Image 1 (spheres, helix red, strand yellow):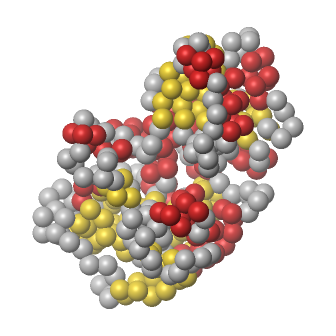
Image 2: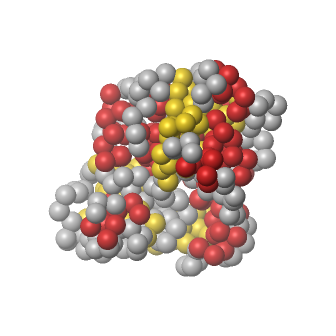
Image 3: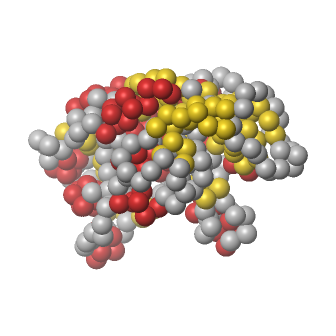
Length: 349
């Protein structure tokens, strides 16, 4: 094994990152070393790359390797590692839990009080190798290729958000045209949703949603999403609404287009506090509201594997660009462009 590797590193506080040659990470007794075969760019990576206010307050350990969504092969294991061996084809659950807080003890590791996030609190996977705790390693099916396996972490957000309750036979309104909203469209249709309304601002992303099975495409720039959903549901509203955008307008629309007794799934993150008509939008409507953070560990991962392996779920239209690691700047340019002409961007070391 070589002593050094290529890695995309956030070297200083400010815009951008650099491709550098660095030492291959050492592993501790409870970690494995993974040779990365594919790694996908996430919105969180974009925040760190752009060095916005969130990144400035959150990232503490520069210089730091970016990235947290990946797939690869294990090339070395620590002496305490029991269930992962050299040669295993793995991805990583990025929420590293403590195992002893009240959430962990109640089976809610994804919202651990002492959560550490790969690529945010630690060095990440935009590199040829990454050290990963055994506790968050997930053995991939050999039937799932690396570029697909690398996006299971964000796909897990969509699976958890969509299937937190059954969707078979229900009308679903998905508001927000980012990759998670697109993934949710595919998941909802694969799991029997009768109708999916997809609301977005970008014509490229709306076309991707069409490929994934959305029944109604609504361009929020020039169409009234609330009116259309109400009209197509006989005035009742959708059984399930999923806010994947996190803007005040999208959240307000979601409350207006969900039926009484329906389900509101909140995944999008507003940049500042918002105002909600609590009485009329939630209490008198009898809504069930779920806040979604991460994935259920490892319940969600099992669902993902079964759906992908069976062929029932096809997310390939969402992965629109595959680039060499050295082309990372092109990948971030695609992700940050005002007019989106990409879905998910995958980097290949």
